[in-house]
Image (cartoon, rainbow, N blue to C red; front, side, top):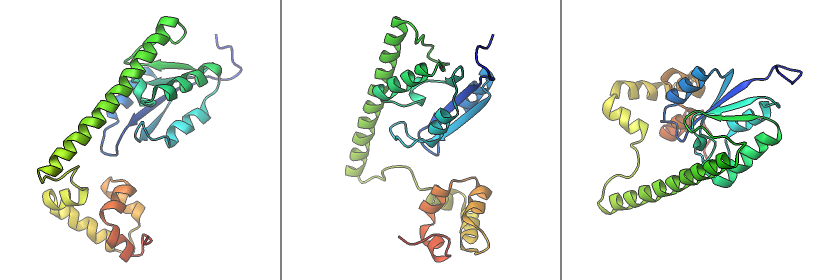
Length: 207
């Protein structure tokens, strides 16, 4: 029986680190669990500016439930994770981790939580170190470092698409929002790849 004078809800939170990563598997798992609503985020766990997580916290009431697929979706910093879990407990909000079941109410469960969070943080730091080492080795070998810009990739693989996007960017009647929606890209991607053309068309201010 619900002890609260209102209907409690189950909230899902899904996050990937970059725009190019896919949320589908997390969303499917959260929907199958039965979440009433799911907040989706494309932002690094190291970045404190996670607007969807803030909106989730704002929406929560005592008796609600927060569901994630893995603990590192909430962040990769042990201190930050512990603070978030404590914040939930103080408000009588349950946290469910689908792929890493943890009993936060027991001493053993809390110990397991700290171990998993520590491993997630260590894994993140090691991955960062490997990436930096690989990029440095590639630079020394004279190779391109990082992902190929989307515009360059399309001009190489889908020239007709790249040509049409460029035409729409130059068209005064086409807004940035409509172009981004038409081609399924973010405004950030649009700005980063067609900066000069957007500025010339008066759709973007010069810095």
